[in-house]
Length: 134
Image 1 (tube, rainbow, N blue to C red):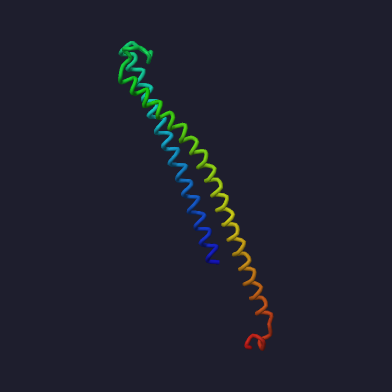
Image 2: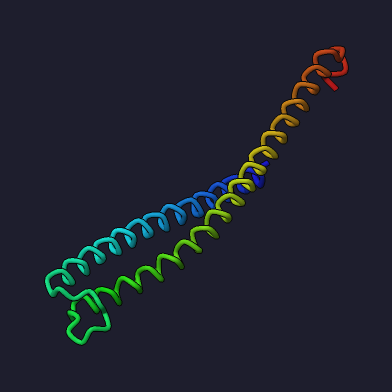
């Protein structure tokens, strides 16, 4: 049953890898969301200082324009990360199901081995002494 043991360890490792990927993506999404919010705040402050909020205005602040571009790029990245997160969560769920299946197969195998051992012990206990020596 060593191969079953190895399979269970492999499935556990794969499930952990998928879980780490989900956690990593969630952390990246949180960080990008924070950065986007911070840029929104900075843009609003710069527009307030210049008293110009129209990005098409000829005197629109250069920093606000650059911050808008950066924020837009971050928002696009967030959209992509959310898609990756959905995929990673699906892969994690599938890996967890495979791990659970491998664990249950291993448990069944151990149960069968125990039953075989119990039956063998009973048979040897019921056998006359003369047959056991042979």
